[in-house]
Every structure is written in structure tokens, then in C-alpha cells.
Image (tube, rainbow, N blue to C red; front, side, top):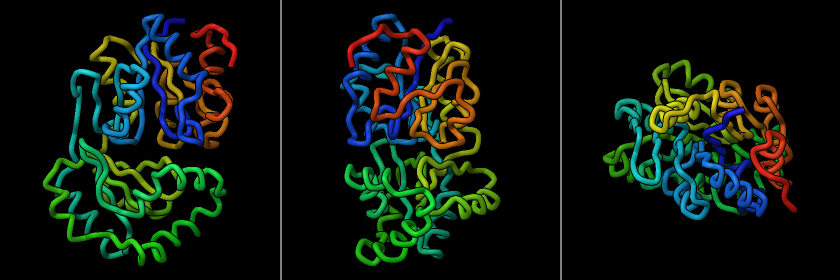
Length: 284
């Protein structure tokens, strides 16, 4: 087998539930780099968040905002802001139905205080322990109770949307997101958590971002391995030649992957790479 590039999702894949990169993952990445294999990230996260891991792990490239912003260590390969008309309509919807909304810029995520709370270490650990069947109740608490304490600052919207917006994040359940997708056919609504929806331009995705980097570095999806755990990973897990789902991943992600490895807390990345003989055995 020939693998020229390996991509990792971040939350639930590269990171443990304690928000750290395990020693086995670091050693495995170093082995991949020593073999001349490109290593990157494919995530819904913003470029600023990604850069800390690119720097500390010596990674080559990244697909940010679910394919809306694609870059290497040296340059931006592709970026596509969301049309202002679509942003205005989504703001109007969020205000009408009291939904928290955040905006992804090249410099980070701005907007909802509640959603900023949700990306912190403590909130992340709690979310991993809450059963998915309770997502509706949790979402209700965020939208109708915590919102009283930390209301959405609507007055900042006009300032925020003067910058290019590459992704919007709406605090909403899956059924509501499905209804929104029918009203906004020019946008894609994708999910990496039970509580929120990522909103991007139609025609972009993690997989398309990987293909753009393939054009840049001259590799095909038949020469790519991907690791993921969430529903926004399904397309890339199903369409690249070598795909690995984490044991802690969603049922849908695991159904389409070519291999299921151990969890993000139990050396899943190392074990997946070892299964495909891309790294040597190590004491972990």
C-alpha cells in the first residue's frame, strides 16, 4: 500500500478527553514524518486553534472550518467566505428564535458566549459524559436558561460581519438543522456534536479540502489515510481509500470506515496506524 498523506480530526480523535495529545500519537506522527508522509488535520475548528497543534507536532497542512479554509505551514491554499446575504438571514433566524450563533473568521471564533463556554476543557469533558439522548435537554438549558446569564450580544454582529466569515455555528438540535437545510439549499449544515450545527458553503467539506491539498501536494485520495469520530467525518471516512474510525466515534462514522481502532483515550491513532503497518511497534 502507498500512503502519501494522513489526516486526523481533532476533537475525539487527535485529542484525548483531557484535551491532550497522547505520547503514542506524538511518537507515531514522528514516525510518519520520518517516512516522508505528509501529516495534517481535517477539522471543523478554526485556523488559530489548529496552529498550536501544527506548531507543536510539526504538521504540514490543515483543513479548517470543514473545508472552508485550507492551508499549509506557508500559505493559504483555499478559502471561501460565506455570502453576506446568507449571514444576514441566519442572524435574523437566530434572533427570531433565540438561538446562539457564532462566527468563524481567519483569526478565530467570535460571537456566542455560551458556545465559547462549550469549547473549554471542562465543558468538553462534561459533554463526553452526557448521553446523546439527553442532548435535547442540554440544548434547552443552554438556549433558554444559561442564555439569561450570558445573553447573545446582538450589538456586536455588525462589527463581526465586516470580516470574512468562513463558518457559522448555531446552537440547535439535528431536526431543526434538517429543516434549516431545506430553507437554505445553498448552505451545508454539518454536525460534530449533538448540540450545535456547523454551517458552511455548499460544495465544501473536509473531503473536498483534502482533495484541494492533494492537488497542491500531488497525491490522490487513494493515497490518503484519515482518522475521525464524528458525523462531519462520514464523507471523508467513506470516500478515501484508507479510513479509520475511533471506537468512541458515532455509529454512522464507524459504519463507513474501513477499520475501527481503539478510543482516543487508549492510543487509537497509534493502533490504527500500526494495523496498516505505517508505524513500528512501540511501548505505549
